[in-house]
Length: 123
Image 1 (cartoon, rainbow, N blue to C red):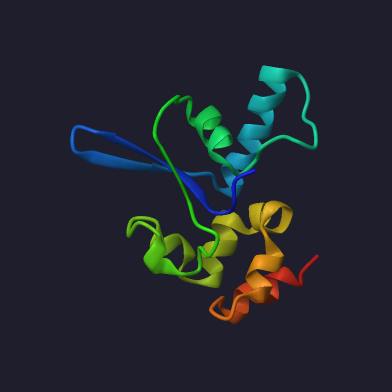
Image 2: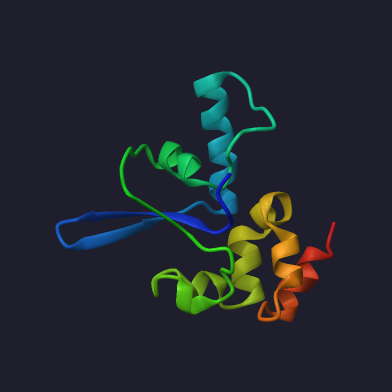
């Protein structure tokens, strides 16, 4: 399974689109999976490249991911605002992180922000 945070870069005519999933998209993806496969099981990929491609209906692109998404320099500048503050992160990825994020990766990091480590202790 892919790590949080994953995205797919689609390049066309000198322009790059960054496709990723948010909490809002997760609910649509669940419905899509049910329509496509009739069921959801424990092995369903909710945060990875396959999920992104299914949600956006694409078959090609550059699969990208970072394990330490709080290190904003590793993200494309277009995506950095989504991770800059706790409020932005929780509004966009709070449920995804709680359900599928690698919390041990965050907790063992010396560079992860305190607010993110605090989220690991929730629920």
